[in-house]
Image (cartoon, rainbow, N blue to C red):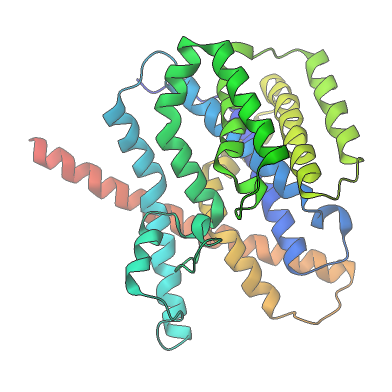
Length: 334
């Protein structure tokens, strides 16, 4: 039976998505708006996304987890829409570039079919076009979730302690080619915190929300410059924002606001897939142009309109595709 949606998770998902889109919009165009172009927005949004994923799965699979059903649902939730978005962009670039646009072995497109091209691009050239590193990382974490769930339920304190030690060891002593904030174990820790929050915490009290908000505000003004410092501050701010927003979302009663949030959350994956490429294409037309604040606002609105249109298209194509697959399965069972 489908469980009731948790609004505060939709709220956090929508806000995290807006943070990431805003960061990419202002950072890509090198606009002189220091607050919104600060990379910390990206760190905060990603940390919250991983926490949401862990919390959502723990909520859904609190009582039991059927492996076959779990992997089928994860597969259908990620790959069809990713493949649709990738195929459309691939064909567009093929047309624009009058041929294949990368001098790469064709077999490497297999990494794209698996959704791992953006995550592994730091190690090798791939056919990466869309979806960014996050897709590959969350796919790997989804594969690990059944093991995380068993360990957390059987040995909650021991597993949390070991995960925390591993997380700190990677932050302070790790030396990887992969950017620190992309590290699988580091991202898994944010995911685990979401799992633990859903399973053991869930204290929607004002005092905790205030403490978490103060922590986030204080950390924002630390001005960390090293990679380690930025990762620590960004993740801690993400955790603080998660707790604060969970309280706000739990107490929210305004129907109009909730409906807007639900729409943004509904299309968040499609927006995530399409936004970065669209931002880059829109900004190409303004390369080298100095924009005043009104022009920036106009460009910002235009970008969101395009993101909304293309995300809607991708979402509907995916919905219809899944509908056809579902009807096909029903036909086989008759």
